[in-house]
Image 1 (cartoon, one colour):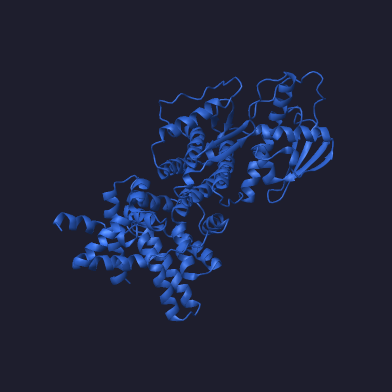
Image 2: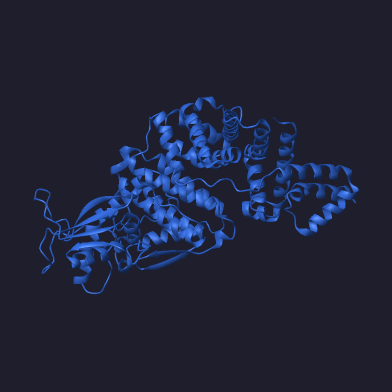
Length: 385
Length: 165
């Protein structure tokens, strides 16, 4: 045995003590230990230390512990720089997804997740899902003055995207980002995504709420964009969890309500877009939330009709959805809704993400059935790839 | 950002009362705090309670942590360990039982306090049952570096367990 061989085998003792060598290497180390007292002593000591490492899984964190702990802390000492209320769902959903990713093993990072939307389904590995999320989170970051994750070389999203896929520019962003990170390990991609979401939260001060975020085919104020990003993070987190067969908790009631509220506010635009598309015959589908037109299509039912959306469950609340664009001027007296639609908040969100079939959802319907069908058909139009 | 920089910044952001810092702190350290608490206390409700207490303490008194002296992870790990043991004492548990539980959690706490590169390599190898070659690939380091870190990490663990508290 040369000094060099002795050094090489000694270098393996840590891995050997952890049973993390290849079988040939372990056999070689063990042969060496028989004849080398120095290494035998160290090997035994490291094995003893390794034996103290526990293998039993720590307790799983109960759902909602994060919120409980934060509330407890903030009750004891109020924050001088509070997080804006509209950023809380994004903080919670990114933390939840990160906790899921922490538990993924190498094989699970290779699973393909299905990301359904109303136009089909994307198939991506978890790291690609993170790039997809990070690319759009980056648009919010740009509004807050953060650098674009793709650097300045990236083309801005076209402000007036047209054609059959107004989301094309957004999908491209995700794909470019995934290509740039293709050589990185999943953990590196996770850290990149996480660092950006944390930077976004540092910028989520109440005064930033009204800044515009340019999605290309539409613009949202930062306060809504944060809720939109929380919603996407939840849905795609669930897509990843489904692919690796892990449980995934629902959003906190208050956060769910904010997401339902955003979708309910975007619904009138989707209804108008759907009707426009129907008048124009088969052709391009409407964008996620186009501005309602000033005109009323000929032959359309008179203005002012609304459907009352009643959400049950933890995010309970009521929303009046105008069916014909925002034609009810605020000064007009409220009109009795033509119908009432009752559904669960989580299912409403899943429908808005086109993760559920409107035909197979348990809903309560009262009044004008045609109006209810119209609303149910419009909700999935809010989904994007 | 290096770990000491992160610790330093976290301390001043907590002192400034930034709510976003509290969230980041929780996300970074709650697996350690809740895991240790659960292991020593062996009770889900008590573990959640202690987790609240530890983060509440740090949020109220961020100045107690001295980044020049040690890492935030190791400070928080020790705080959790100490408070969990105090809780068992108050619960009038037999002292042998307390010692046994505290010792069982000690290795985990020592590992949590190792320098980040050593801890990451050790945890990736041990808890996920990988070979050192797989760990090297997973972490994007050389096999030589993985072997060295595992050996050094275990040596430090052995030192602490033999001579530590």
